[in-house]
Image 1 (cartoon, helix red, strand yellow):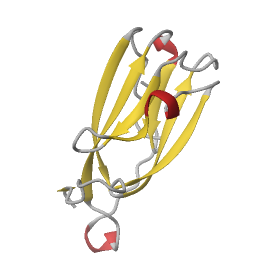
Image 2: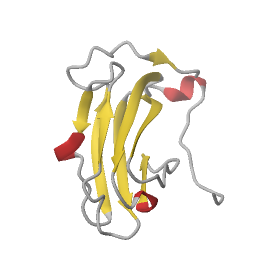
Image 3: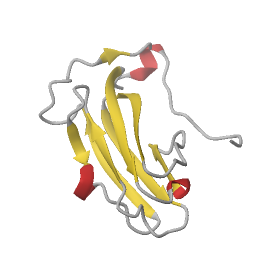
Length: 130
């Protein structure tokens, strides 16, 4: 909801060395309680959430290669109550976060990651329109 925002883009030769290869990335969420307080986004983009209690979600995204930031938030500021996030690669293998490392405390935070994921065989990617 709302209006405004910003998006970076390039056209034709002005793209230089910018990556135009897309990588399938899945944000897997396990929501236990207070799902109505939980939201997240990547690189400050579209905000996902809130969610239903006692549920799991897989949000599939196509992201360009390079550095990204996952922002995880809790509106009340008391964490995700045992719920967690994890990032999965194109083979649905966990690459970041998970049941222990994907816990969210307080109002949330941010986690940086780079695509393609190190050690993943998802390197070929999908070429995005330029």
